[in-house]
Image (cartoon, rainbow, N blue to C red; front, side, top):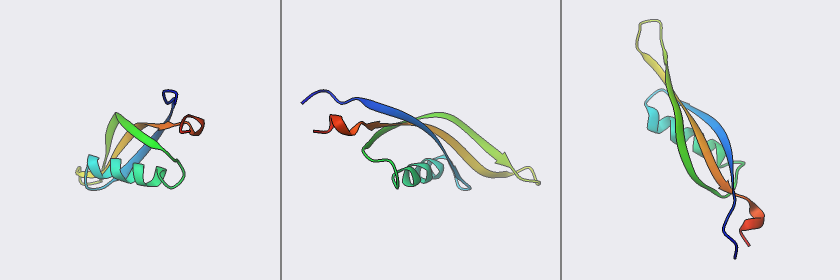
Length: 73
């Protein structure tokens, strides 16, 4: 068996209740169409501020690595 080769994609998740929820939301959505995801890296974190000056939502951009299918045999 050869060593796996990974492809990287970049996705952004959003959540009102924190960074971890934003990561979970992004990965759960990606898992509906991307197979064999193996790791992620947080590359950017930002937030949205509401009209009262409070945090309204968190956004987290991730790089996600998944194994190319021909390398799974």
